[in-house]
Length: 570
Image (cartoon, rainbow, N blue to C red; front, top):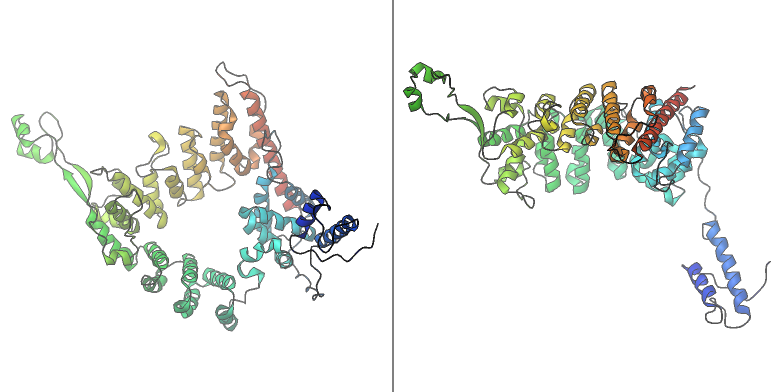
């Protein structure tokens, strides 16, 4: 019912909170704006609340009518198959934490399947149904890990929507160029105009696109404005040179070593050290070689006792006495870390100030070895192979520092032979290769190997050491897991179940298996769905929890197979 009363002032910012406070206190103690005490005060309060309610529901303040937006752009991609569109709606309707964080039961976790579904849809080049664009944008807003795939799938119409809703403006920032179409890469005039006049995100997108197609042209374009760019922009532009990095980039990167920004200098030095043939890499090799050498340690037995035992000069020369005892020297790596960080080292990217808790000399030494070409060491250490080099003992507790630096160099230079040597055999005691000082380093070293070799190594690791330390290593393996790796994971889970422990200790690996096991493995898991007989020392009820976990795994694998089939349906 509408009632007339004295005019009510337009509520200011925060008016709704003020009206709520007035209602709680009562109009006898506090009156609405523009109204005095008396019988009309309650009516004025209700009228003000009604006006403010309309404003809040409208979502916009009254203003002059703006121009109608231009129509949304066309999306030239083929539409999703109907079954796949229905599946996407279900995946988007699921929200993280909707189950309350308790026991998961046997239902698949749809929020973890959405990234995989988006990757598959993008690979097939489908366009989303228009009515699901708001839900796609909301999902991308809530999960930054989804944004690249979700915005790529959402396409140009989602960016059109994002310009109309402040809640979705992140999409314009997350998409290089904010959805603006890049000029054709053969249109030199348009490219130069965009580079000179475009927004920063548009220029980054342009440089990245050019770099992927023609690294030299991208580098030359960057050089035209390099001296006038801001330091933070120079850093971002320089980082784009990682794509297609090659010897032709060396002169530009050498100039960047003299940049006034420390971060730019450090990035330039890192990129140059990834080029084993660069002048910087050669300078680092000279410095590192001074620090590392081979020493043939004296045998524990002296020549005098050997002669007393009847050794001849010839036997002494060969290192064998008549008693058959060896006196051969043991080759050992010796380390003499640098005593100072001179200006030349700093110019080449060595950070002079050591982090808290690190000695300066070991800090400088690690940076030199990390930046030196790995081919340096075979030449320096007697022509030995990487595997032979990392097997040598190192004096004075320098082995950890030296091997860790070699690990970083192998990752930076993408050297598979050195990575294999540093990883060692997956069945080695504690699975620690000669240089693998942490799981994080092993994971990085594995990243330099091919997908099949990587999966085989991790499968061997799991077969020997179980799953307790495998989570980080599994994360670098290609999806879906290769059959040997999938079998190793399932066998290890089965062993853990038979041991009678709860499955919660393996929830991380089980979650990975749901996303990464080949769906064709579902049939092999049927035998694990029954509740097993529990051994005497088993945790109470563990068998039932394991059966539930395996049921969820099988259900998820079959759902993934169905998702793939839906996307493949024309």
